[in-house]
Amino acid sequence: MTQINKKYKSIGEVAKTLNLINKQTGKLSTHTIRFWEKEFKQIKPFIFSGNRRYYDENNIEILKNIYFLLKKKGMTIKGVKKYLNTNESDLDEVNNKTINKKIIKTKLHKISKLLKDLNKNG
Image (cartoon, rainbow, N blue to C red):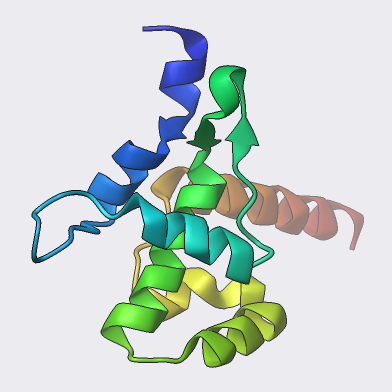
């Protein structure tokens, strides 16, 4: 597996991750992702050889959030656009996801260090 394959996922892999399956045909609905790309400026796939779209973890998280807001919360595209433009930093909470443990540990470590520095100097 190449470095690109590890870091990025194809549009088909993302459609599978999001469970975007056409109920009539049983095939993956990659066209939904392409449509969302046109509608939501936050989605920025990488175009590599052969004009194929590849998505990094950040893009996939945005797509997961769009999916959640549209399909699970029943919001309109206009509503999701407005929400994403005003609340981009709150997306993890909206999707009811647990925050990555590494991120929490890193932030707690930084806070702890700041507190120790404050106590030494104060």
